[in-house]
Image (tube, rainbow, N blue to C red; front, side, top):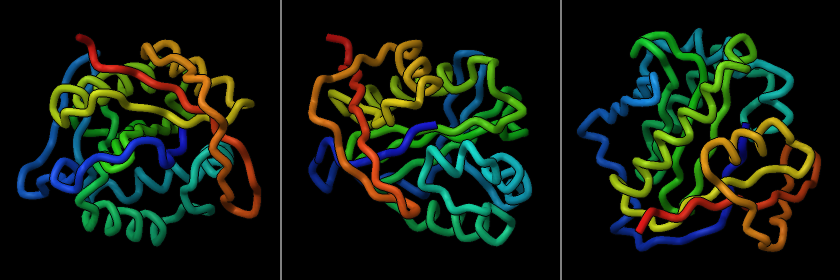
Length: 187
């Protein structure tokens, strides 16, 4: 699980996501698709988890009301793309997201589905989309130093620690530093 934060700005014309077309990405044994109204109960089940609450900025507790509000915010955003991680195109197992204004990605996988390589595969797929489909030369992740699982996912997806100064963030009453991991587009 990874937070997104300010690392790269693009021009406003580059950042808009066309909400008139559904985005669906396939590869790595996954189908990444947009969330829909039928997913609210699955969202609540996936994201109402102490680890998700700790490592991400998602609301806690994450119940049906929180899921509905979250889905409404996703639909209203022209800069962020949130896709459900599935293996069959139907049942959500987690989420991967792209914030095109910041050039950052993030992800969360439900507790029952961890340890299957879903996060790394989804991150590789979304990273390819960010470079090729969204035209971002560099994309990044921001991960807390103590989040060993997310650091392992970042490495497995081809990201490297940037060496940039940590980004200070306050969320849910705690202040923490985020390390930046980057992935440049292939030449």
